[in-house]
Amino acid sequence: MLSYAIPHGFVEKYLDSRLCIDVTNVSINVATIFDAFGLGKLANPIDAHVGYDTDSRVVALIAKGIGNKNTAKVVNDRCRWVETID
Image 1: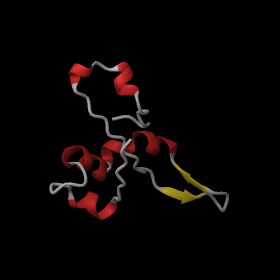
Image 2: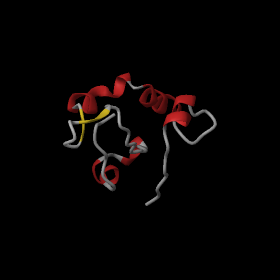
Image 3: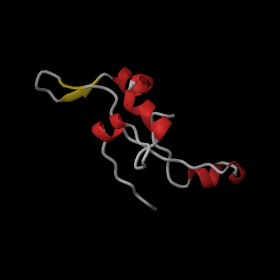
Image 4: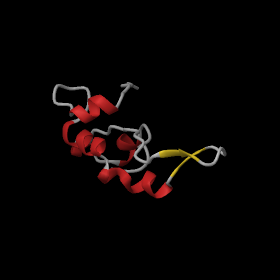
């Protein structure tokens, strides 16, 4: 789990194909967004980068995935997803 997306072509270029790696990039906001006194919307940068292990959606996505019959209720209720194919 990383706090940034793996670019297209990275697996094919840098990782051994015998490992049969399948990469799925998931973008999820784990930090609360708040209005900074009318100056704009901000998030706590520490929460944004390390808050994944305490977010129930992230844990459920890792354990059960998304878009299948086993998808966790918290993911179905609080997430939306768009599948893209290159």
